[in-house]
Image 1 (cartoon, rainbow, N blue to C red):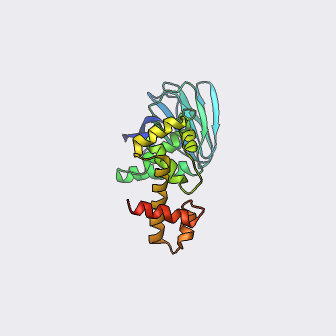
Image 2 (cartoon, one colour):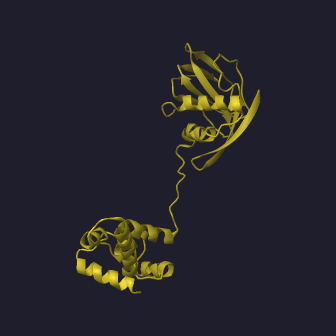
Image 3 (cartoon, rainbow, N blue to C red):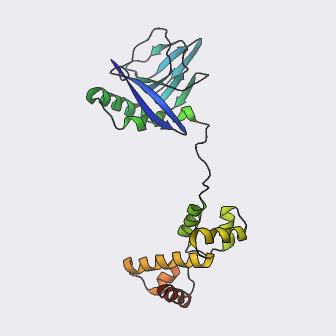
Length: 242
């Protein structure tokens, strides 16, 4: 038997997974009392199982998994008939033992891919599946951070709202800035005023609609945010002659 190390990303953590090829997909017997250097995960593919961890007895059903902290004595206490499990070790500190639910069928997918690894020596899907299995282990940690790239935020604002009645105040509110600060920021990133940038997005959309849609100019004017055809046509000609 050989161990394979797989690096996966779960939440904002990078986790090192250790699988014993040829054994992880077939471990379905009662085990002696033992411990591991790293934390261990046991997932139930089918049936039910129970584990004795130190002096605590924990039961698992299908599509559930148990996390057993490193250097903690444990053993499989019982298995239902035809129970199937898959196990691996993860380099992650854990203070307490815990039972976590899995997405339905995820453990079975993991079992299939681990067998593919055993048969062919490779599996492209295994890291992605392992990251999903390990997601509950990083639960409670928020991997998201606010976007601070204001050029990106400005572009997204216009791209998604150019067809609406929007103002400089709306953009300022979305950036949590004053209108004066927003105006300076807009000039810096686009070289345009608010009205100029809005018109640029509207005219670009109008040109694409003219090329790809069978619409009248009045219909196009409405779709890009103009309430009157004359206002649209005036802006369109002004932009075209620049």
